[in-house]
Structures are given as C-alpha cells and as structure tokens.
Amino acid sequence: MSLCRTRTEHRVSSAYRVCFVCTGNICRSPMAESVFRARVAEAGLDGLVEADSAGTGGWHEGDGADSRTVAVLEANGYESGHSARQFRASWFPLLDLVIALDEGHLRELRRLAPTAADAAKVRLLRSYDPSAAGDLNVPDPYYGGMDGFEECLEMVEAASEGLLDVVRMAVEERAA
Image (cartoon, rainbow, N blue to C red; front, side, top):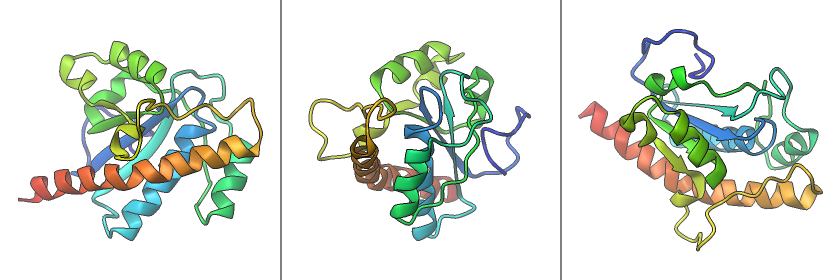
C-alpha cells in the first residue's frame, strides 16, 4: 500500500513512512522516491519502509513524471512509474518523515503541519548528505536541460544513503 495514496487516517501497518515533496511532483520528488525505494530494497527493508512523493501544488495531479526525469532514472537503473499528486495536511499523522527538496518546500510544509510534532517531521533531503556544504537545496531542473536532471539525481543519490541510515535506525528502534 502506498502511504500518501491512502485515504484513511488510521495506520494500517507498522511500516516506517517517508514522503518526498517538491513543487509539482513531476521532477525532484518522484526521482527521490524512486532512488530511495531502490535503497530500501537493496537494504532488505521492503515491507518495513514505505516511500511516496507529492507536490506542494496540484498543477500536475494525475500526470506522470517529467520525461527527462524518467529518462535519467531509467538510464541509471531506477523504476520510473509515477502519478503526480498534491501533498495534504491530513497525511501528516500517517507519515514518519516528510522530506522537502528545497527550503521553500520546507517552509510551506511546516506551515501546513497541523501540530508542532508534525512540523518536526519535515526535513531537507540534502541535510542527510554529509558532503553537502552550505546550500541544502536540490535545484529545480524543470526549466533547464538534461544536465540539471543528472545533477539532481547525483544530489538525491548522495543524500539517500544518509537518509537510509537514519530510517534503518528508527526501524530497528521500533522493532526493539
């Protein structure tokens, strides 16, 4: 079951749930979702960790990922199936982490959070990359060329390892 796609406010599993959020949910966040799902599978955490993505806006709801996102993902061995949707405040109780792709998303998501505890669930993706210095934003590649999408993938991959380490520890704590 996909975590953000559910329409119930009740947790139906004990899976650790992560939702990646960018602007329109067609470039950065579906890329981050795909990469993180691959890392989860490689770590043997399928069924224990669920990942999904959404956008702060609903302009592209129902659309697939941008063709350049799909091309970069597939060229690097990642799955690319996706349907865009807008993030909803009602999802916060269902999620353990909400991963923003840039500081604008971070601010918007924290404003949208119904409680302080929900706002504390929102983190920047690149904050999990120990080599990221200064700017923790993943730049929006939408208005540029393929090189922007490739750079985005590099940033997402670099941060996914650190995020996986944090999520793995949380999953282990739940199991203890």
